Each structure stands twice: as structure tokens, then as C-alpha cells.
Image 1 (spheres, rainbow, N blue to C red):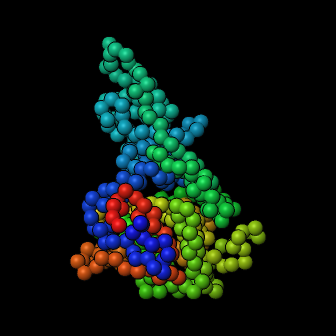
Image 2: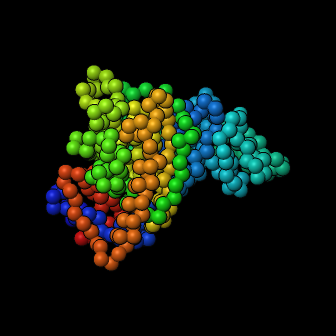
Image 3: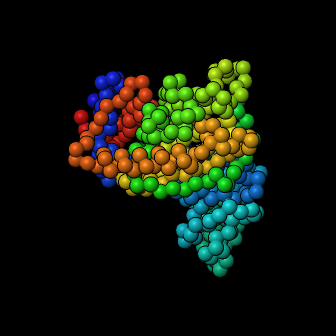
Length: 357
């Protein structure tokens, strides 16, 4: 029997060990590599054709790099000579060159040159090329995985809802990049993201622009959508007449994809949140921003993301301390406000970390 009852009205939340036990943490983190993760946006290739992906190292336990010549590839970023990382920052070039001993690779990953290797037998071989990893693109968003299932199926609910947005035309805005380290378990951070229940209590300014009564949550396989409705006069999407939401004043589409990817669409563009576990009580949170309409920046639900983030981090870190107490084991869900959290917990409960009941 699952530790999370499928009936939310009867269910209890995850046991506290999911947030506090190091062994459980390691089991859960091991599942990350088997899922799709956000790598970059196509606009990032406008100024560079080599893009290292250090954030994926924490998620997939693999140093990776994107390269672009006649096509985009996702390659290992580890030199096949002695294991040095090859690309350490974005750049433009016709080759990849290891700065340790000078081994050079083409942008397709094939080894091209290695100094001082005259007389080495059976060299080069296929093992001297950089391995290539699974990679996919949807509407300008680039994803990578070690063994993920079909990305197209995973994204179907997103395509049906917001496929009309010209996401591939959005522009990367490096000024919107953030990189935080918080003192809390990664799953607590996701819990907080997956419900708007706390908005009136934690986010005074955000509550002022969103209609809390009409805030809604929708579930799909492997993810959750939260739809924020704008209060009268606040910025909202200009929806096409074929949109399922046509006629509504949508302020934000908040998408979560298991385990820790958040795609937040606002009238100004897209904020990507990446949740990367570090330890049982420490998490890295990365923001990337891609702008659609500069004139709408700083307004509405996506107006002050830094303030909202700081408010969220305060409650998540305090909750980490709370769930570590011997006085707390597990709680209950609000059926009307915490369906997204319940959905997330049911997914986690099916993981190898669940060994009880």
C-alpha cells in the first residue's frame, strides 16, 4: 500500500523522513538522472556556440556541454585523456580544446588532435571521442536526460495549453539570472511551489495582483499546472481565440515538471526555476529569464520575482527546521488548495525511497 492515500480527503502528507533522512535523500536524488531537465534556450546561441551546463552536473551527475555547428549536440564535457573539464564558460569557436594537455575535439565530439601521442598504439579510437547524450528541443527550449521517457508525451499538456506562445522568439536576459543556496530539502521547496494556499499569508504584493478565489490547480502525468488569474486592471495575457482559456484574464501559467523544473510564463516572458538537491537540508535554486515583451517587465504576477523568492525561502527554511522536530511526523492536505502537493507526494511515494507500509 502506498504511504500516500490517493484520496486527498483521507491522505496524510509525506513522513518527515523524506525531508530529514540522508539515506532517503540519496535514493530520491538518484531518480533525477532518469528525467528530462532544462538545458538552455535557443537564443543563448546567438552570441555563443559552446554552452557548458554546470547546473546539470548537480541534477544528472554528468558534466555536459551544448555545441552548435550545423546542428546542436549535447556532449560530455569531460576530456577523454585525463578527465579534465573542457569548457568552463560560454564561448564561440570551431573546436573544443582541453586546457590541461591540449587535446582538441570537433564540435561533433570527435577527437581531432592530441600533442605528444606519437607512437601510442591503437590511437585514436572511438573511446577518445566525447560521448553524446540525449537531447531534445521544443519551441526553443532545450532539454537533456540520461534515460528519460518520451519528452513529447510529457509536454503534451503544455503544448495544448500554451503552444501558441512564440517561445522560440524569447530572448535570454542574463540580468535575470539568479543562483541561490537555501537551507532546506529540495522537496520542501517543491511543496511550497505547488500550492497557492500560502499566497495571502506570505506574499502580500503578489496577493494584490492575483485573484486568490479563482486561482486553480490542474494535474497531469509527471507535472502540475497552476493558473493565476489577474485582478481587474492587472497585466494578463492577450490570448488567441483558440486558446482553451480565451476570455479569461490569465496573469501567469506556473508549470512544474517532476522532479524539480518550474516553467513560469508571464505576459513579459518566461522565468525558468531549476531546483537542484545538494544535501538532505541544502538546495540550489537557479533562475533563468527569457523576455518576450520588455514593456511588461516589472508588472503584475511576474513583477518582482526576487521579493517573492525571498518570502518563499524564509518559509521553506523555517519549515525545514519544523519538520526536523520530534514533535512533527506528517500532516493533512487541503483538498481545495493542495492537490498539487498531494500529486507530487504520490509520485515520490512510488520511488525506491519508499520502503514502508
